[in-house]
Amino acid sequence: KERSQPAERTKLGLLEKHKDYVLRAKDFHKKEDAIKVLKRKAAERNPDEFYFAMEKKKTRDGIHEERTTEQNKYTEDELKLMKTQDVRYVSLKAQTELKRVQKMKETLHCLGAGSEERKHTIFVDEYSEAKTFKPEKYFDTPKELIGRAFNRPKNGQLEDADQLVGIGANEIDYDEEELRKQQERRLKKVAKLNRGAYKMLNEHEERAEQLKSMTVKMALQKEISYGKGVKKKITKKNKDGTVESYFVWKQIRKR
Image 1: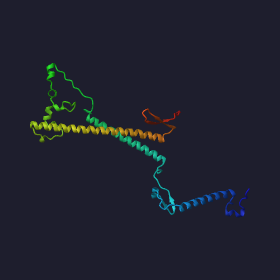
Image 2 (image 1 turned 90 degrees about the vertical axis):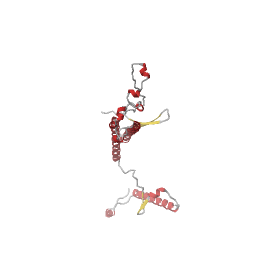
Image 3 (image 1 turned 180 degrees about the vertical axis):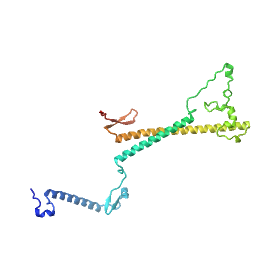
Image 4 (image 1 turned 45 degrees about the vertical axis):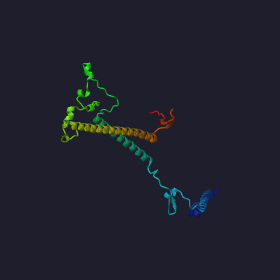
């Protein structure tokens, strides 16, 4: 047993024991070996050696500073809150797009949007009437508008400039040929506006579907990352060669 520090030498501190010397010697030799390795590397260093990582590394007062990154800038709780806010923002945008699509549908009524061919059956009394039947005369509309199931004005309405939307009455020449040309130009303009409106409607519908799908994926990712309970990832390979992955949570009995 090693003796303790004598009472008259207490002011000098604790007396070093053998185990303390062993720890101090190991630490000294470890630092000595590290200095030898650094000296050897410095002696054998290639002056033309270059790595791109050197551009972002620096020394301050002779001390090497590690590269600072933004990877661990936020805590776990902050990241969880940020993901929750992202899901809420995307969900809000999805609801906004759905309301916009609904409003546009109410305005356009989706007239003529169906791809199915429409039929309109007219019944007559005699066979001779069926042979001489002219739909443009029966519906009192131009021949170019017979195929339309909506917005099919009559000839009297087309002749009245006040009933046409977006057309100046002062610009109309009441010559029959000129009036027919003006009617064709107006019908083409209305058809162009109609196509543009439905194209915009389709774009908003696609965006709403994308945002809805994104909301589901982000909510699932948040649940996978921060959800409670024991979960297991299962990867299944389909017959067509595609790989499908999903998570299964362990069932927990609730009180």
